[in-house]
Length: 137
Image (cartoon, rainbow, N blue to C red; front, side):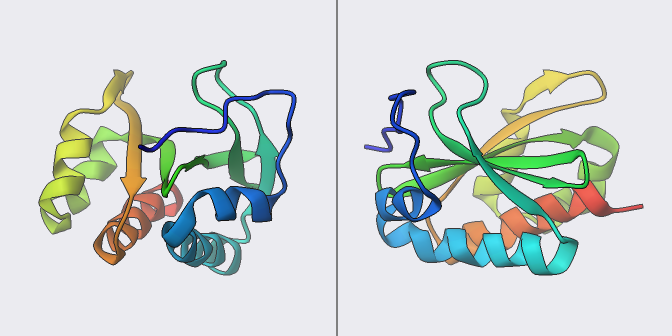
């Protein structure tokens, strides 16, 4: 379960990524609209980070990387960097699942990388809260 699209030679369209995500595609579309409408994020399909990650949509604002969303069989995962100080502002508002993902982040400098799988409406709400940290002044 949650296999990714790993064939580097078969570049999918956005609709293909959504179809692969199955019932979770509605959650992806909600996050896509949140990023596009709320922050003017641009979407780009790419195959980043090496062969084990697979195809994703990179979301960026101007030249600033916001996140990658990786299509998975029946779900999708967000991959993005968070700052520890900013994370501290909203940590207590997050679900237990989101807190566990944050606690297990890959440490890097004054923050780390999160890989956050979205499978429910609660996950979407937490994802929006976490992504908003990227735009907090």
